[in-house]
Length: 415
Image (cartoon, rainbow, N blue to C red; front, side, top):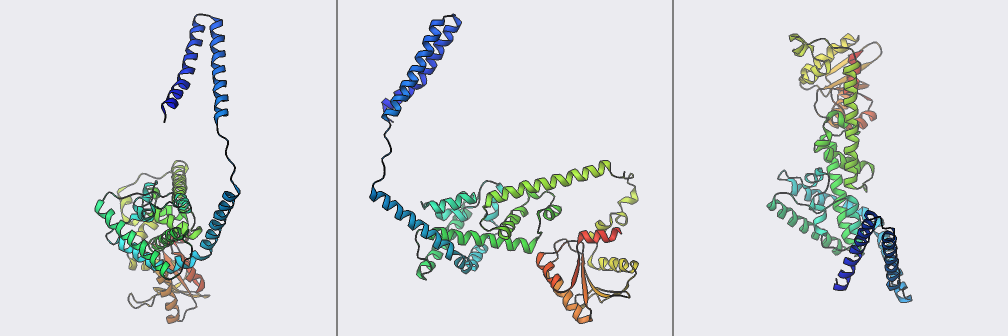
């Protein structure tokens, strides 16, 4: 900045202060002439400054015909590049999915998960996705990274950072070389974006699959029922990946994560309020006695949660007998997936009983289907104190298997 410009800035700042000071002094001395003169001088100088600024401002020069043509060609090329990208990206995202999965496994093999680690902070995503592109000045790539709300970040472990960054750069370069050598991409403008999207979308798919396998709760309400402190656990980050993949894989990382956290907070607060309202306005509970603390007098579902698999089978055998069914228990081992056979005048049903803490997966349904064939039964049922994974629910629908999840079991026990 030139000295003349600095002097002008100082003048512009000092002038209003001096004029205001003169006006204040005139008010204190009740000097109307000084007040009016100072105000008029202040307005006059400001007007003159605006006029001088406008007169010295250079008008924007119109583009020449050659410049217009060059710009139109650039816009047309960019548009064609984006169209080419949207048309061809899906096949390569799928083709390199296994490679990305191997890449993720290589990174997390030491129980370090960079994708989840900084994501949980609510402000940034790990450098794994962003690091290779830190020096690439490409607007379309920057827009996608900013849309996801990602920043270049590192863990607190310098050695781990170095290993991850070296592996990431190696992996990205190898993907790039394979795509080029196989003539799978002809557009240099979108190639960096393509590699970013290949890794990004498969990261989402990878952790979606992890979530389905380990947790699998479909709705946020169901998720919050099993994780009452949902907003403070890593599980909600996995749920974010699950939600993005199931809803729209182009949804931005951070906005989706923050939105889910807010929704989870609302659900948890609502549950707390309902519980408090029930405690305040519901039927009073008598003062606990020593006998109340014994397992036999705990709430029924809580008692079930404490049971072993065999105890739960015996419990359900007794339950069905009280409902008027004739009940046959199969051997504890070699039961072919059926624990109880219940029958009345109208039906004969094979029942599998699962006392689980986690979600019941598809294998339980497969066992029940096999058991129906072995015992010659036409319909089956799986009863659990937990819930079912989506794949298990789908297979049950296709094979005439009734499902009693935790809520349905509670309802049946209350009747």
